[in-house]
Length: 242
Image 1 (cartoon, helix red, strand yellow):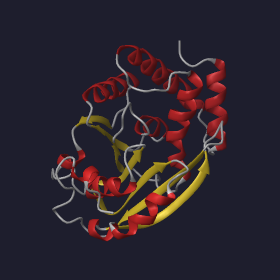
Image 2 (image 1 turned 45 degrees about the vertical axis):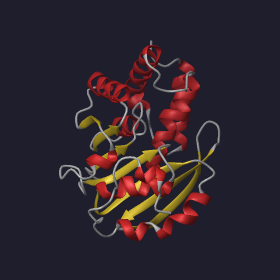
Image 3 (image 1 turned 180 degrees about the horizontal axis):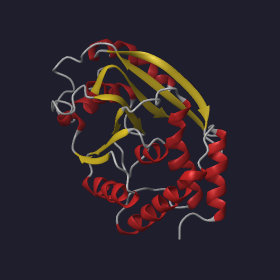
């Protein structure tokens, strides 16, 4: 069935607002929409049910990442806490040269993401089931990514501890946040030096087709993260560093 004409219009106009021509990618987004709606009838993947919500708050919101000049390269990217595949799947559709690992601790969500990757033929995308606190100590993943992205996952102090250990030196992590990010950022600088990170840009923008306020918070990796981080599963959330 795919996206309706109205859904296609929302996608294309929203893409234009972000400086993106999404017309070549309409078939992929239509297929992803069908896959998400079909799977959501079997298991609870997302609370967003309408076509407009999915297009605006999943597809376009994910693509606000491309407002930052961080994607011009065949980077290795980790989508930390991908959920039903956001922002990683839209990012991979529009920037196929990126090698993206989509990580989540919930098996049913990882199973869906793997299904979507296969159905869309996304070469260089992999769904991964596991805890960030464990995988960040695996030599295959530790300091192995050029970019880490996270959307609606955890407060910044927790995200920094979970995400920075995955980043290679001079890599960048981008956390997608809503309007109330100032309080999280206020405490963050005291934790970053412990993890080998520093603050980068904080980009404020409006979500296309609705104008909701968003922030892209960039953390830069400038030194190796000490081996003790991240701490064992659950500790970063229970006892954040800041």
